[in-house]
Image 1 (cartoon, rainbow, N blue to C red):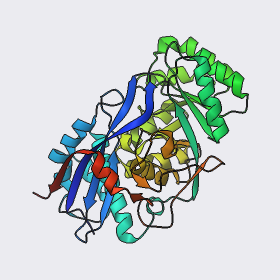
Image 2 (image 1 turned 30 degrees about the vertical axis):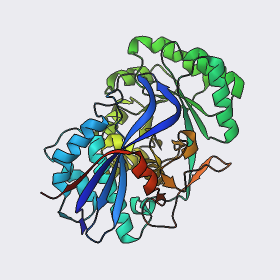
Image 3 (image 1 turned 120 degrees about the horizontal axis):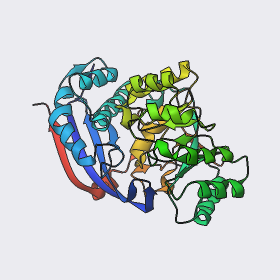
Image 4 (image 1 turned 60 degrees about the horizontal axis):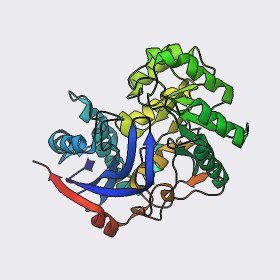
Length: 375
């Protein structure tokens, strides 16, 4: 049985090496919510809540997540004998809407705790089959096409297997075209709009077909499927859905409507690992490739994503950049690195997430802390 005796919440402040800009805003410092789930035997599992500082990617923020975990989520799991981590997601879904990122943080921590208790790498507990996974990079919106070309060329030289370019109206066709011209036809490029366009922009977005992109990610509304289906019918470029896929039912709807042909699975967005695996399995049955997106996680969140990305149908490079891409110093040891082939190693030589926590650094970065126990 899996028993969670306590959950310790910590907020850390981790400054980015440089601001990261997408169509809905810019981040210079991450406020990150870390969770430590304690077992009666003294073993702990760690996880990270990916909710941002502002409600611009989703309705959740670090502050709403903290409140939701304290008031509603933790009381459902603390002090209970659970048959395993797979029981957490349905327990949190029963008569409880929304707050997927907050739920995911607790659920994923439960999986990590279970992996440690069983002496298994988290990747193997989830059903992962690979020991290395391909890495892509996400490049924020740049001031000019020339600046973007410089960043993209450096990324390709570093070995990244996929280059994701953030776009918005006024920084799209010309920018993508400049990168394609500079890097040539073989560079694996994609665009990510973060819902910056409407269906009225269909003719404009169709101009991106000329550049042979792997995909265009979430061009339209964050909760839309129908308009994406109409847009996909007008594009040769595959649409990848991110924000619109919040559960396996939404993925089924996407497939039925042909609203997208690729899915970005972010475990925090869909409520955790159980839902992620369900979406992964559904997409595999339908021949839909998936990849693991990122949310500017610390090394703890990165560890969870790498474990998930080791599953069989994660066939496209994920947003799994090494620690040095975003941070001067991460909070795990060893820090995440990428080999010259553009691959990250899945840690299979130790239980759990496979990296050690730099507890002194975490303590130094912590600005608030709260420990929750069974009431």
